[in-house]
Amino acid sequence: MNLAALPVRTTNVALSDESLLAGLGSNDPEAAAAFVRRFQGRVFGLAYTVLGDRDAARDVAQEAFLRAWRHAAVFDPRRGSVAAWLLTITRNLALDAVRMRRTVPVDPCDLARLQGGGIEPASERQIMTTGELARLRQAVARLPEEQGRSLLLAALHGLTAREISELDGLPLGTVKTRIRAATHKLRSALEVHDE
Amino acid sequence: MSDRLHCAEARDLTPEVALGIAPAEDRARLLWHVAGCAGCREVLSELSALADDLLTLTPEHEPPAGFESQVLAQMVDRPPRRRRWRRVALVAAAIVVAALVSGGAVYREQAPDRRLADSVRATLATAHGQYFASGPISDPSGEQRGVIFGYQGKPAWIFMTVADPPAGRYTIEAITHTGERHLLAEDVDLAATGSWGGTIPVAVHEISVVRVLDPAGQVAFTGQIVLR
Image (cartoon, rainbow over all chains, first blue to last red):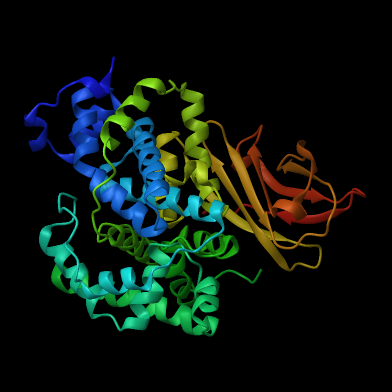
């Protein structure tokens, strides 16, 4: 069956992420097309953020969707959202690609934009509520710049504390402290609103 | 490798483990700790979820023209393999192993490093496991040199990490409580990998000690899995 040639019913737009993933895993061509359409901007966006190269990002994004298709059956909604699962696959593939190229394409401008919240947010169809996502974004934006940079270099680019210390010319202990402080601030920011 | 972590030390390691950037030894030490500490396990779980959620903040970018059709066409060209039950069990068992070994690219999309605590639960559930336990690996002087993990499921397996073993080919054997010796592996290059894992022919709780023998046949390391 030629999945690419089939039209997509607009009713799929209303289906949950979990339903579309289940359809993808069972080779439902309409669900597969809707799934790719729903997430392609975020998947390609993350790959591009990490890699900084459109061709490499396209290859990684395509492979991420194929991995999701093959492993849809092992997705466990109790452990997180479809978006987070798919983006984690994407991040790991992108980091593998970075390591293959032996380069560290870190664009400080991208990090600054992400920290400052000056970007249009990704679509908010994931398990986090709109409010939670907004709080997380605000909390990231409120982090001291140096803490946010260390955190995002680790979270998005997979750099170890040692690699960040070498990149930024900082003592290893300073980087570790910044990462710890940043994660605990974000956790606290989200917890306050849970009470 | 130092002795077992206290909670304060574990909490210091947790952010880097949750972010998936901690060295393999730190991940192993933290996993050993959280296996018996519900409080630190909860913190690891929360920070792991936080790390995943950070990815959702990245900006969207429009992919190149034709992206969607190219992805869908590849799904036609590469139909998914149908796995047999045993394969599923082995994959599930490998989830935890992959989480401990820093590479693990094959299985990372299923259970990234940052999901260690959840991985244990998922592995047990998916592979119908009964328990997952750990214990120290020590050298003849009694100094801890690594960690051994035992998974009681179908199949049962063990996985060990050893810090800085001397170069050489090692033999690994399990001794049961009744004194039976089971050869698990020969010609293992521990210095190259720092770890070894494999299925075991007896139940984890039947094993008294796992011995790592050096090329001369002398006991270089011993591991004891602690069942709680």
